[in-house]
Image (cartoon, rainbow, N blue to C red; front, side, top):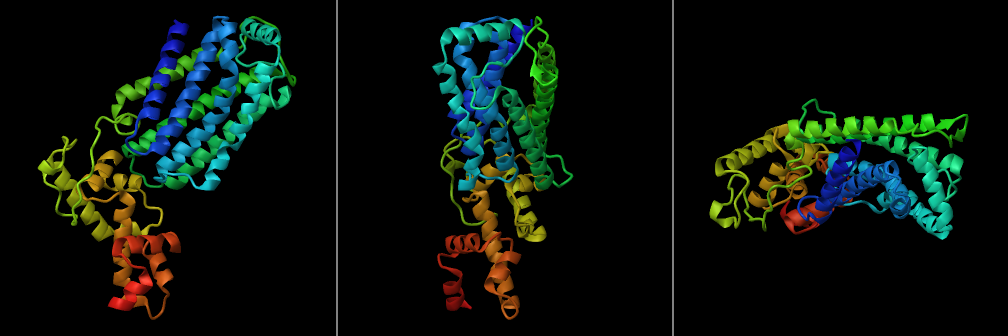
Length: 391
């Protein structure tokens, strides 16, 4: 029964990982990093399965890759949560530094296969006999005594960073489906890390790794299975956590461009069936316009599509669909358009006391570069040229 749950759960994680990798819809960055995190989960369960069944020959080929994936997993989850919460579709160059440590651990793969295979298989056999899920031999760039502690410390460090992102990025009280989803992911990772930490505390006794005793470290498997059943139970109870977040049920074609917010594209111009009827689309268009014009949420420099979704109480993918296919602009361009409009309204009133850049910052732009790029994209000219000609 235990093997059934491990194998079944591992295959589900693998299927989701493959789907996310091949899926070209939505935010490809978060699709890819989340797929890597799911693939790491598959490797972990697969190593559990091989260890339980003493299949050391197969374990020999998969184990070193599992080490790298387990180091990569917390990095991917952090990047996923950060990009999801703050609606990022690309990493800044400094963001790639997060992958530096996992890249260093690739050296473990070469060290593993450069060692005599007979000695490695013997070590794996002892690991399986003792019911351990990690090898105590020296096959790593780090010393054995600190290797596993380093991995746990790294995972807990990223876990703390994830919760810091959630606290900073989701301040509103409304529990939208997007907020539920990202908290669901974060809580799952938290529980899993606590289980792995508990395992490590049992394995390390008096500062050394215990080498004897049959299956004394297999206690983590029932907890892992219970956690997996709870997670899948939550997904069945709230399937919207998958719809539009992990799975995409509709593939849409090239967007239809129109000029005004209150004039949605006619149905015949959309080459494929819309996931929403015309009445719902019209309602979303009017609600978005009213929200932007009356409450002006775009003045918040950190306003994201997840924030818009929360304000309107509709899924993120519906917001994205309406913006792209019935308004002709993505979220960033539409919000920056409102900011440019607000800037031009405030300029005659404040130009005598404030600089152009200061008024732009008050209009919701995070920095001067974004303001200049958005203004030129919206008006076809730089602010100085436009103001000189018209004001």
